[in-house]
Amino acid sequence: MSFIRATSRVARSVTAATRLYSTEAGTKNSNLPLYLLGAGLVAAGAYGYTTFGKAESEKPKKVLTSALDPQKFVDVKLKRVEPYNHNTSIFVFELPEGQASLLPVSSCVYLKAEDLKDANGKPMVRPYTPISPSDLEGELSFIIKKYETGNVSKYVHSLGPGDTLAVKGPVPKWPWKMNEFEEVGLIAGGTGIAPMYQVLQHVLADKSNKTKFKLLFANISEVDILLCQELDAMKKKYPNTFDVVYVLDKPSEKWKGLSGYINADLIKQHIAPPSLGEKVKVFVCGPPPQVGAIAGKKAGREQGELGGILKELGYTENQVGFTSSQHSSR
Image (tube, rainbow, N blue to C red; front, side, top):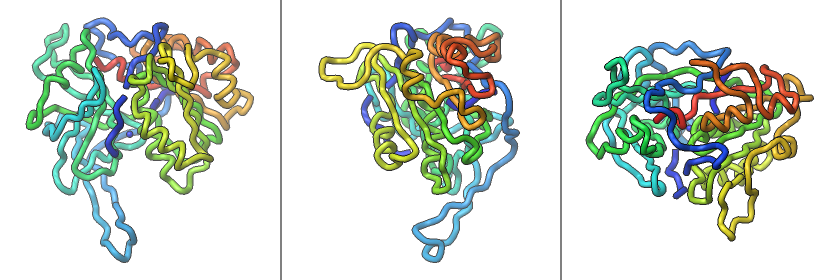
């Protein structure tokens, strides 16, 4: 089991978790993300998607095709770079007319740093979750933090408009099904918000959605909160199905929200209880120390058995999902 854990432009703020949930990059030779276990989607070939204008009668349907390939890397050209905060930027890549990413929700892609080699002499590859809508024609956007001990993140930050980057995908994660759960808890740290945002962006806009989402989002300070304006806008637009709670490790004196770490008391207060059985799901995404403390450590390439706070609170493995984190994508 595993998962998610997504465009308009973003506000100025992102990433990092708390001292307990260190956002420093892992070892330089770490090439593997925190992958999900369990069900996945089989993605192959191109995808078709029909978009509509204001009214079907006013504007003819437009069929989009996918610009990506799950079997091989495709070069995409960097259109622009939008600085986000002191160490993070949004990278907007150009896709051909009539094409979009068409990534199934939820899924990520691989980014390849052709000039950087791993221990086996192969180009370094890392998973990232786009923040642009799957059906957005002509653009593919990522929000990426630059880690000084990272490799691929520094490589992407070295790119300028006109440069190209190799992308492969989709890489399927959790196969989202509308209204599969009554309550969904999302626990994220720093850049771990990207997969969560992908799902929220897709699901909340669907008029058939009845699932209620509650997000606990941990960061170091106000400036590090990723996609804050977008999340607040979602909360205002979908008050009956989405709520977000920010938790800061080092807030300023002006901060009126919660401070400290995401602990058992916070989870009990804000996340639906395990007693709901199959009606509840909790997804976790963040730096490995955070995920380990909340849901248990990974075992090699895969997530290990459920542990941490969620196990202590009585959640079962079927109720918890994990995702690869962009904290692993360095």
